[in-house]
Amino acid sequence: MDMEMDSAERIDAIVALLRETGEVAVAHLAERLGHSEMTIRRDLDQLAGQGVLRRVRGGAISLLPRGQEPPFAIRERQAVEAKERIALAVNDVIGAGEAVVVDSGTTAARVAHAFVDRPLTVMPLSLQAASALSASRETKLLMAGGEVRPGELSLIGPLAEESLGAVRFDTAVLSCCGLTVTDGVTAHDLGDVAVKRAAMRSAQRIVMAADSTKLGQVTMGYVAPLSRIDMLVTDTDAPDDIVTEIQACGVAVLRV
View 1 (cartoon, rainbow, N blue to C red):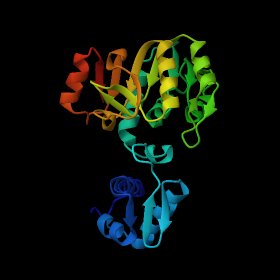
View 2: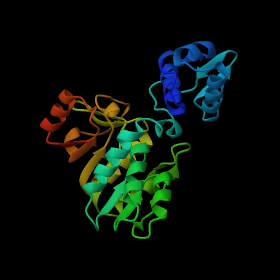
View 3: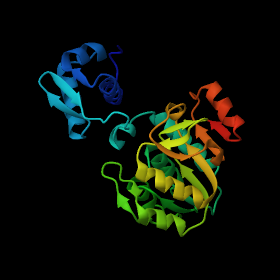
């Protein structure tokens, strides 16, 4: 294993092993990742503080529910460069003066950062995105109501759905947990599913911002068929065969 693996890469590797095996041992991780046991223990303690795992003698046990996504704090360190490229590309397809709703999730949060200081009207569906946009003098910030999901800091529930129903947006920038031709757009959380549907109903154009790891995946909550999307912005690791299938459904695909 690469001895120069940085902290984010180690954390990603540990989370991947936890999701695969359910438990990890300090000694095994140290040997596999090429770092000292002291470094691995610090990583495990950090993950324990984020609710990802429970420390036990000599290692840790996963607290990640099967079939559910890792916490936001973990996901925001994954595919960072790809998400940044996707965010900048989404920004390029949004015209000045548009009214835009920006979904929750780590990629959508990067999109919100890209919108800062642009003459747009934006309704963010997470506190992370709202915080980024609140510093923008040029951007009109509309706040949705709703219940805040712990950890994710996304807005869900009837108040969020009613807020979306009160506005007509030019574009909805959505994220997802899974995207396939047969099962369409899917998400892990059912409250998030309802909010995504409400955003889609209120927008003329749907732009999906999803890194390549989401393509070919199916999660529990069904959002919409693939045909409801106008454009998919993803990264260059997106498999050619999947991209071709998506394009055949009438979706424009931008790989960056």
